[in-house]
Image 1 (cartoon, rainbow, N blue to C red):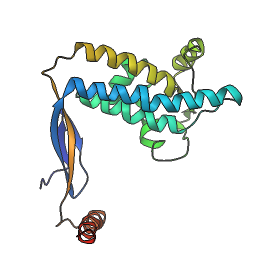
Image 2: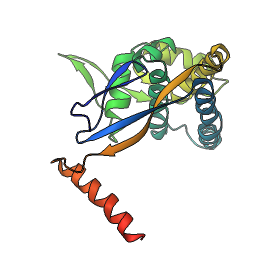
Image 3: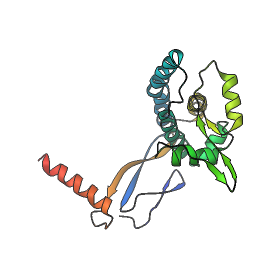
Image 4: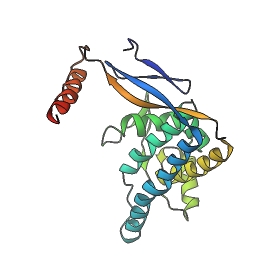
Length: 207
C-alpha cells in the first residue's frame, strides 16, 4: 500500500483518498473515447430530450442536475489527455474556466447552493442556463458573458470535440483509468475503517 496520496493518471498528478490506493489500468484509448461519446449522446441525450420537451410546455428551468452531470465528463475527457479540466473548458469556449470549474464542480457538484465568487468587493453571481440547438444566438451571448454555465452547449461542444479526437486517435494508443480502489485495513482513518468493515461484513453475509 502506497504511503503517498499522489498518483499519476496519464501523466497527470492527482490525489488518492487517505488510507486507500487507486490501482491504474490501461485501455484502448479510441474505444474509451467512443464509450464516453456514446454516453453523451445516449444516456445524457435522453435527459436532454426530456428537459427540452418539458421546457416547451412550462417556463424554462435551469435544471441544476445538468451541471452535476456534465462537469465530471469534462474532467474524465481532460484526464484522458493528461491535462487539467480548465484547459479543456477553455478550448470548448468557456470564458472563465478556472472560476467556472470552482463554482460548478468544486462547489455546486457537492452542494445545492450557488455561491458568489469574489475578490475583495468585486464579485460574480452565477446561474445555470440551458439552450437548445436552435438557440445558438442566446447560447453565444451567455458564453461570452462568462458568468453562467450552459450544460447543453457544453454537451454539444464535447460531442464535436470527441468526434474529432476519435478520428485522430489510432488503434494502438492507450489511456490510463482507475481500475480499483484498494483500502488499507491497517489505516487509522475512521472512514477507511468503516469501509473495510462494510466490505468484510458483506462477504461474511453472503457465505
